[in-house]
Image (cartoon, rainbow, N blue to C red):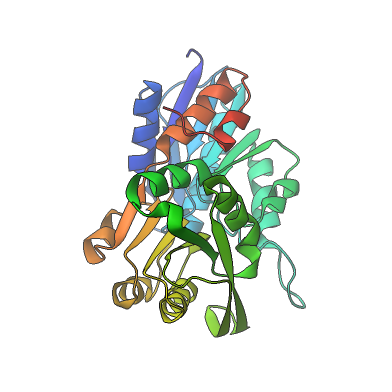
Length: 318
């Protein structure tokens, strides 16, 4: 591939390196540092004139710093006359603030979309948006890739009794995601209805579906403090499930999440590497990681060559 430059932000160097290796490219030279007043400074260390630029930066860790770094890198490449700048954001920041659910609430996901556009991004590649309508916040193309093909592959390879499993959504919002996976595995699905009193605190749960004597697989797009999925796991065990797995695209795992997972009745908690998990895995042996770098790499290759990316919605690239 000619006329392509791949840069990595500081949020997830390992994923960027895996994508670069998969594409047979070197990561571009970029120096990011902070001034003593905590302002972010970015220096692009090579020419990008007329190049197709891809910047990989995930919305994790120090989210606000990493978002600002991404905006500055996009702008630096844009005003250095690159032909196109694509922001590759495996985990989209502020995606949960996607609607006005109470008076005077901000729609921060729309604000982030505006900021990326104003900075000069021409195209966005992301994975498993919390709400797919966020694509409509942009006036530029957005490719929302799915971890689903990689999840299906993991289930078939790692759960011996997967034909007798039941796919469970920990809330009503994830029903569409769960039915899609259940249909493709040709198994049943169940749903847990939860009532929240306030954010990050679950009040009550009702299981809809029969999980008795079956392997239950909880599927969700993200887990933050893990209150919901740990409550759900206990509910499934009480209802007679033989084993409980959780499969999540974005494992944020903030606050008490790790201690909750350790004390919950999971066989394994499987996440993708859209967010770095090395530190979490040291403290929690139940966490397993699915590598999705090949999906991002193939999306970049197809975008650069002007090919369709719809193949990636149902297949894992070899």
